[in-house]
Amino acid sequence: MSGAAASRWGSTGSRTRSGEAGILYLALLFSVVLIGIVTAVAAPLWRTVVQREKEEELLFRLREFRQAMAAYQAAHNRLPQKLEDLLEDKTQLATRRYLRRIYPDPMTGKADWALEFQVDRTGAVSGIKDLHSRSPGLGLKRVSGKGERYQDW
Image (cartoon, rainbow, N blue to C red; front, side, top):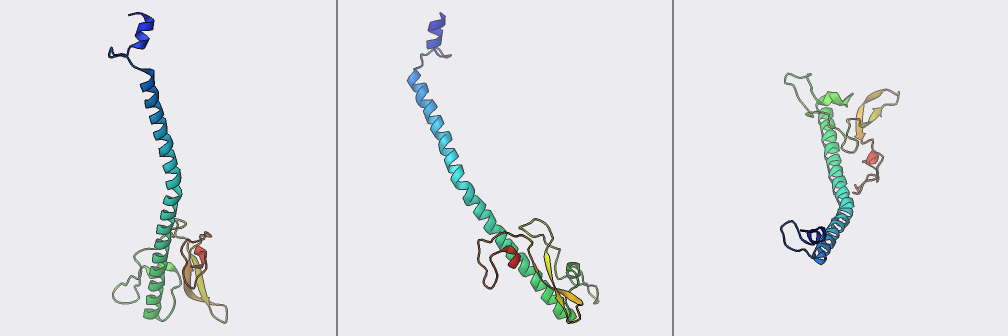
C-alpha cells in the first residue's frame, strides 16, 4: 500500500470518512462543554446544601450544650465553671455525664466555642451562662430571637 492510500484506509482496512470523524469530534466536544456547564451550575447549589447541613448541626450542638448546662445547674444549683465539668460529674455516688464529649463547632471545625460567663455584682465569675460559635459568617437560616451571624445564635 502506498502512503497516500494508507492514509485513506483505517487500521481495520476499511475506508473512513472525514465527515464521520468530524461529527464524532463535535459530539465529544459538545458533551465536555455540557458537563462543564452542569458542574458550574451545580457547585453553588451543593455549597448551599452543605452550609444548610452545617447550620442544622450547629443548632443541634448548641441545643445539646445548653440542655447539658441547664441539667448541671439543676443538679448543683450553680453554673459549670468550664465545659469539661459537663463531661463527668463525680460529686455524687454515681458518675453522671451531661455531655458525652466537647463537640467541635461545625462552622470552624474546632472546639473553640465563645463562652459567655455569668458575672455577679462584685465582678466574680460564677460560671458559664451560654456559648456561641466563633464563626463570623452569616447564616442562611433565620433563628427567631437571634441575630443573622453564627456568633449570635
